[in-house]
Length: 250
Ligand SMILES: [Zn+2]
Figure 1 (tube, rainbow, N blue to C red):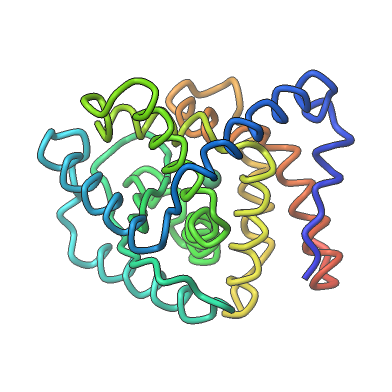
Figure 2: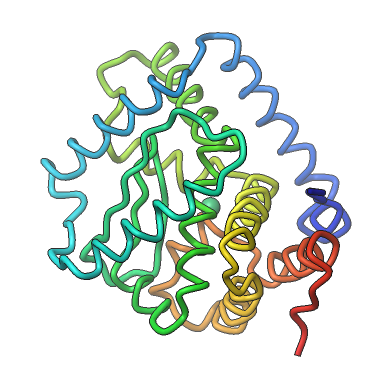
């Protein structure tokens, strides 16, 4: 499997300024890496604490729908089962009663809003791609880095504002760079391919999102954490062509 990020580097998003900012971020992350070893077990503990806090404070409202839950559980299990070299991260998936189109993850907990679920209606392959993407953030070590940043932050600013939900949410929406997002996209595609799902579904989705950008403010949150829709569609399309010899074009 070849993961190429040339599509980002050659674009406006890969401008010199952005690359420099990206490098500064990587440098900070590298300092954090040395601070503590975030094992899969530690990630599970952070995920559990985050979830408990988010529910207790009412930040997240779980969707009470047994049919949706069992569908999500089934998709998650199938995707996890086709991982190569799986981590020991303990995964759980939840549907949130939320009207913004969003999906995110922390410490093995995957959250998908009802609005996002509805967007996947009659498009199971898209749901698989999105869940696979979120699994990728954990399996590829992005969440580990988020936790390391959190630890570094706590070290500098003190523990009292430590693992508050708002802080983690801020990290999650701001800290993944475009390369992380692409890597998660590629990872999700690879899992979907192993399950014989339509791997072009995500390309179609990102093209749709690119067309919608700037038109619907309710999608804003999702774009902040998952930016550059049209570029993403292009990169993913090229990943699919290179690795699976399939063209997603019309
Ligand atoms: Zn993401």
